[in-house]
Image 1 (tube, one colour):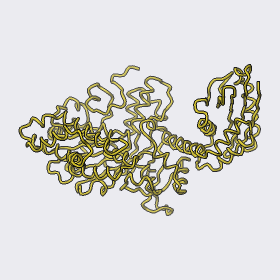
Image 2 (cartoon, one colour):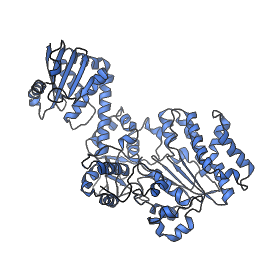
Image 3 (tube, helix red, strand yellow):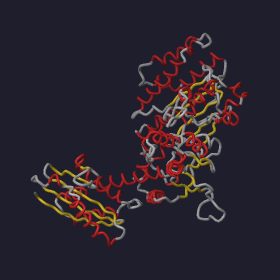
Image 4 (cartoon, helix red, strand yellow):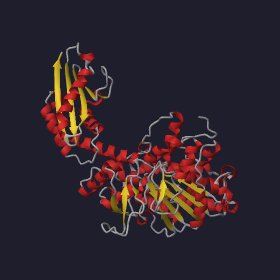
Length: 573
């Protein structure tokens, strides 16, 4: 399929994107909205990861930056039609644009060093500051100290680093005699990693100083845009920043500026001649509701799937979002001891909605001991849940008036929930070492009664709410066996005239074939377990091993909801 534009995914630099004639969904109207609503404030905008925050910040940098000539790259875009606004604002202000997404170390001092590197990179690109006759020597001296510093483990360094944004803004103002624009992307990444690796209080204290000095009562600041995934409570980070406004996915302002609207997806599919894929894309990657009723598609997923379809016309949808970052927040949620949390997660995984109050002032410190509302709020703001539009009705007396209904937005996120829940369940089974080892020994020694009793007991204790498809039981059994035999376990690997569900090489001369069946009723269990054994025999899975001196086991397992029957045939050749 020949297109008259390039189609790349993952380019977050606006200039690069426009220079190579790459497909771009025009979001430049955001500039006009920003200037109309908040021309002199610190605007925090939170969105889930992979919803276009970094590209938007790069677009703002290219539009406002006084060091650039951006007329050509904005030509043909929505903002270029507003000629008066462009004349007043385009390339008229010095800009500090930094990203904190790489400030992700396992300890405090390396994180500060990464931040130092980010600031050095900015200063090297704007080295004219040091040559300027308008920047006073003391400011140059401090910035020189920042660039040349080698020792990071002392209070003087921390103080200098915490003051760095203010120092740079001072130098820019002195050189240009104009107020500056500060753009900070992924501001909450350092705080997130500090929480994960247990240096949260130190990092919060540092970030309060680092951001506060630049954004609080800074006379050189024109305005600032700060983006991240979670809104950190103002009292935690932005203390004293009085001109501070936050727009989360719960707000109507900018609701349509991050992510793709339905008409934008329709246009994309028309331009790529893939309109026949609309329904499957909607089912897998749509479903988010920003503001009150703005329907949003995940742009990362849509673009990745379209790119795949341009190469493989019958490609099936994948979970692109899950592979772009860690989903520990979901996995850890399922480990909670709070029964109300587990019940809510079960209901969500089963496709139901759950009522909750949305807590706006979230901190990462809440994750460890979050109650139900806090956890659901975090999952909502980070993109794992979305609102059900028009939540309340006049007859709805079962919930508080401030409650909203939350649900899993689409098939991709439901896959994440189910996978995380299954992984957690398997981990719990593995961690019960005594019984897990007994189960594995029962497989090895051909004891079907114990296998039946153990797996049934495990299923009864299951905290999950699955659809009970065959692949669930398959993953459960293979997961437990892999904990013992690692790479000696093969699933759906070609053997004989077919592919056994699970093949295990127990030892050099001991081989196990396991076939799993999903019954539609309890009465079918025994019949299906026998059918599984016949399938192993009829498909001759063990043909390659019959003429050597070895032990061969055929296992037939049949499951119905939380019941199991295991049968075995064993031969010694």
